[in-house]
Image (cartoon, rainbow, N blue to C red):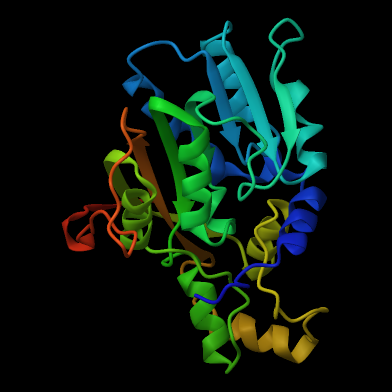
Amino acid sequence: MPENVFDRRGIKHHFARAADSYLAAAALQKEVEAHLLEQADYLEAAPKRILDLGSGPGRAAGILKKRWPKAEVIAMDIALPMLRQVPQQTRFWRPIKRVCADALQLPFHDRSFDFIFSSLCLQWVHPLPDALHEIRRVLSPNGLFAFSSFGPDTLTELRDAYAGIGETPPVSPFAAIQQIGDALQGAGFRNSVLDRELYTMHYPDLRALMLELQAIGATDARPQRPRGLAGKNRWRALNAAYPIRDGRIASSWEVISAMAFRPERDPEYREDGIVASIDASQIPRRTRS
């Protein structure tokens, strides 16, 4: 992938604009988050310091604070309007600290978190290996990192519809599971476990899907993305190209989930920076509708 895969200012703007509508529209995100929170059971001891990376409005941060009220929980997001929603997710006697920052430059000391949680954030961060190195840096030895990300089989129907009318799909590129696994190994994590699931969401029509994407901030983040609204003829053609079944349209979302630990001693790296490579064919794939 080229260096300028994503427009960071565009991502920040999209999620800032979606702050008020995110929770009401993010049904899939809530389900993925709930499954990922189960990974916290692998912690051997109660964490003293937790980072919710790419927290959005802070729903997960609130759940983590409720589970470990004595822990210091920090919600971090690139969009300040998202962080303004965080106090609504907890009680005043269980405050959550908020930090507005970029995942590529974490404003924290080395080895300062026992648990780092990140649900559906890192697909918007590039280069991913740089972000993973930063995350390992601020994770304490034997600390747990659990995250989820969209994979390349996300919005395949929308991609195909645009291709069917001869246009480049306005969909951001996402890393495949093997790339994520290799990046985790290369960043120095150990005991990595990866999984992928294919969710299918249904909508009454294409406009409903597009409105949901806008409501959750998941719009095209490429620097070369086209600006402006689609004309009526183009919109009709796109509607005609999108498959309809039983009066509804379907949308596929590939979700890659991973958990890994920072070792007590950091590994030795080869000159190419790679520690190991994961065979993607050995990773199971499940589907949800």
